[in-house]
Amino acid sequence: MKKIFIGLSGGVDSSVAAYLLKKQGYDVEALFMKNWHDTTGVLKGNCPWDNDMMFAEMVANKLDIPFHYVDLSKEYRERVVDYMFDEYKEGRTPNPDVLCNREIKFDLFAREVRRLGGEMVATGHYCRKDEIKSNNKIIYRLLAGVDKNKDQSYFLCQISQKQLASALFPLGDITKPDVRKIASDLGLATANRKDSQGICFVGKVDLPVFLQQQLASKKGDIIEIPFGYYVNIIKSDSLEDITKDYLYKPHDGIKIGEHNGAHFFTIGQRKGLNIGGKAEPVFVIDNDTNTNTVYAGMGKNHPGLFRRGLFIKSDEIHWLRNDQEMKPGMKRKMLVRIRYRQPLQEATLHMKKEGMYIVFAKPQRGIARGQFAAWYDEEELFGSGVIS
Image (cartoon, rainbow, N blue to C red):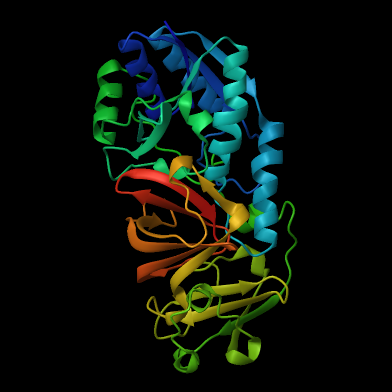
């Protein structure tokens, strides 16, 4: 019988995943990761790691499974948090949860599992896995979870075939309400705990305060770009024009306020601008960390919030299904999302030597540099990449 280690986080999802594995007859052990302990910028009311470990240990005791603990906080800072700081410094919008899965849960955590004698790693993600054979080779497929409101396949868009091979997702075929009910029926301590929010293993944060650990505040201008700016933009059909940035300059608009650092803002953001007296709310449409300028537009339908496409450099493209990798000159219609819980969008992928151009059937709101775009064939995730 294979020994399975469940990443027990102190939340209801991993708790029920552990129960289901044991019910299925697996030899199950629990491993809790300590990945963060600095409370700088963390909002009050979010449980610190020691509370999470307490709940995880209570669940392990209730289910009568061995409980282990590992401190990966040094590696988490190096591989995830430092990356996040570097990305924000460049005015990009990273997704640390995606990196956490690739670098921590399915890499360092998996190594610790093997050191403890485990063969498989299980998590509480709402997604599914199966396998097929192609040319006498086993290929593992990552599929969306049955609960479409909780599908978390996007967060796993950067893992590899090797990582997926030793992964188990017990919650893939059930819904969140069912998970809550199972936990309640079992009397698990986590049954009514709120779902974690914010940055993976850090929690919900005041982002500017959190980032100020490494990024200094610096006064700069907020420039409003009027609707009229877009009248003279050529509606070209070339892939380069469809996916390029508008490259605003301060003289393209008017100053309407000041900010404390362009790296604290991301496209589509409304809070934190502190701009009043406008007929409609004002949103960030771009940021330039070189000139420390934030560009904004009035109204949720401002054209600066929308893009027809995006570009991913060739060295930033990752294929989970290597057998489906596109070669230069190929194009393919697929479904794409650029953030968690965004409904899948129809798009055409164009593969060129320099990278991948993704052109959407409908313009997309809030495409930001540094985000991960993930592409699907129906409910199966094929690959992903960092938006340039």
